[in-house]
Image 1: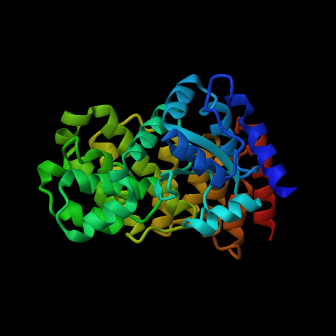
Image 2: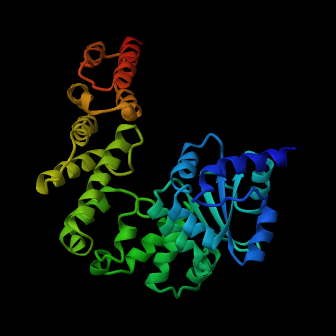
Image 3: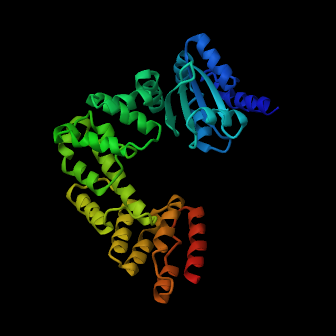
Length: 357
């Protein structure tokens, strides 16, 4: 009975895609592998859960598209597996456990895992990633064996890093070893930019932001000014937000805020009021100026949204609640000019609670 329910749910979820999108088939894993062998195709497995909003987005907005259908139906037998049902447990027993959703597996007809992708993507990018997985030379076991042999070309090391990132595997050691053997000219080239600018491979840090900033001219000659600007803004936002939500980077927070301020002043970017607000609050906190941090929070509160609520909690959690004067300043933060009603209500409740305990 459970198996019938699983197949029924999979077929129902696939219905929006059937007319012109990906033709997901109501098959179990073993039957699908057999069918892939008969049709001499790879097997594409959408590993989903019913509560996963990125899974639902992909079903309704990516797999339902004609372009997706044209591509997937040509190359794959495609199935969906609910990872909270028995078929999902069966898949986890056979392959490395699927712990993030959505996860997409590309399997050879013999059952070998050829490629793994994780997360929500827009259609053009998703087709690019899946296309990478069509080549069996990009399978992680193949790439790992080549890497261990120590004779990989730069192109193949890049393929290896792409595969690690797509599967959300730790790529840090491979990336650092690769970068250490390259010249500055190679590291500022268009060939290296997809790795240098990818936080999954090369996490945001003051060192990385400084490198991109100092070599912006060489980098943007190959990839364009827009790409460099976008990277720097993303890096500044990520560094400041990580600190403000109370997950302090390993590097000195005062150094980090000074670097962001210095770089914004030296090469003006279309930085948002939200970014500037984060900078002023982070700089005050990094230098233990807590009253100034509260003042800056009040000054910039209308620039934030409900998505920033966790960050604001991180800011407040640094404050000394025994300091009554400071708590009065927190309670006096002006909230009436917040445009989002839901955020305004959440802040009113939180500030009332925080300042009173």
